[in-house]
Image (tube, rainbow, N blue to C red; front, side):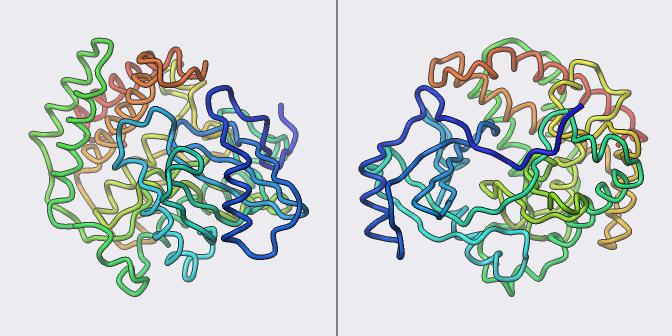
Length: 358
């Protein structure tokens, strides 16, 4: 059981502190109406970019920066994320409004940006507030809002937002598959034969590129903020670090990879990126069906996109685990991530060999 908790910050983790004096001086010089001393806290979730809560007097802002020990610069491009939000927040209400970008690493050790803070509930892990746990109809409506919001993003006129040059849609599928295969090679630690099988199959069975769209690339429950008074309403979509122009079905596949069902291996249940197993939750098959209905898209290769999503998720987690093994982070949450990589790879192999499994 869990009470309804607005997303809250905590004291900054060891090894991830920011230079308060330098940051305070920089903000005083570049943001208007700042008064009072700076208090820095950290949002404890997230395995990639770091997110901090800045309190200055009565005002609260959010700061995003790459992880310490970052070795994958292209995956943590703060200027890109800032640009996406600057354009998207004008036409897509769930996108928070950014306020300031800094490319001077002398301030806090890396580039960063600052954005408005939005208030709401973020569903993290398999647990859920009692309000949802005891209301199957509300859970169903939340699932519908979840997938409908992704469909809305994918049907935006991205060229009208000024983001038409954000990515290269031609060859997107091939670049993603080969790119994630290469990232896995660079982040290897333990031996995972299923990752090899999954990687080789994806490389050999790529579909043609689909109709391009603006895609989030990490769309899941714990990247959404919900209205505490109306839990089926999405007030913010967070973490736009991997947004680009590409095949929306690749984005759908990633989202479905995050969606854990009760029949999935138990090893994935406690790693769930949201309470997707609540009574009343839609299945992956139902989510995909509703998505196709809302977007007008279709495919007979859903098993490829789902297999890709599982492989990509496994590689992301492997990269995080590699940072832990190599001593770049001390976060204890990362100590047993290799087991999660193994479970995801096995699930991926199952999916690619059964085209009836979404």
